[in-house]
Image (tube, rainbow, N blue to C red; front, side, top):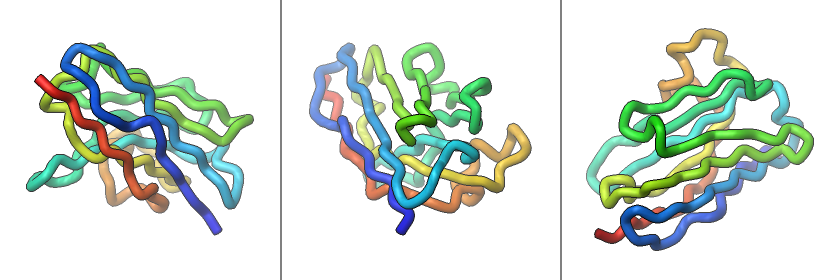
Length: 127
């Protein structure tokens, strides 16, 4: 059974940092594109960051560029999101996602291109 499990969320003051980790199980994810999406209350799920299978290409939403860093460890089947300089508007449930169908750069940004999703981890940033 394929599973993605996120961890590392919590409550942090504005300007602080958190590191989210997604652990994949059920099969090897070394050939998958991996992404982080987030959903705030009353809003649609939005793209935050993504990384290609080898870790050589990364993609970021403009709202997080320069503050968030995505990375992966294929040997451990994990992907991480280092979040610095957090703002109250970063408050959301953060979801990890995986896909083997992504071939074009534009596809990394689209939730519909991902096949597997985690349950999410809450990130709350206080002002």
